[in-house]
Amino acid sequence: MTLWLDLPGDQQKRLQTLGQGMIVGEDARYHEAVHTVTAIADGPSTLHWLSAESLSNLRQRNPQLALRLMDWVMRLLSEQVTHAKAKIQELLQ
Image (spheres, rainbow, N blue to C red):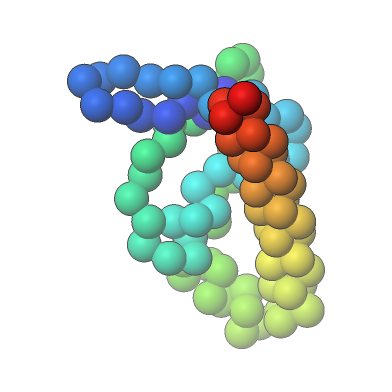
């Protein structure tokens, strides 16, 4: 799956290609963020969607599993921040 940054004038810039087990849209799940990135599957894909209601139910019914999910999301977000910082450094040189 490739992530594209939506730019003015119906233009896009490729940000990165994600591999198996990655997530998209997590920022919108935890706060009401405006989508600025388009994700396009590069081939056959299986996607899973977690609604806010389902996440809330998971927190209530199985807090330990919800915590493990949140920990996994945090690790992925940390990797994305590291990738973004490297990309910024590359653009500044």
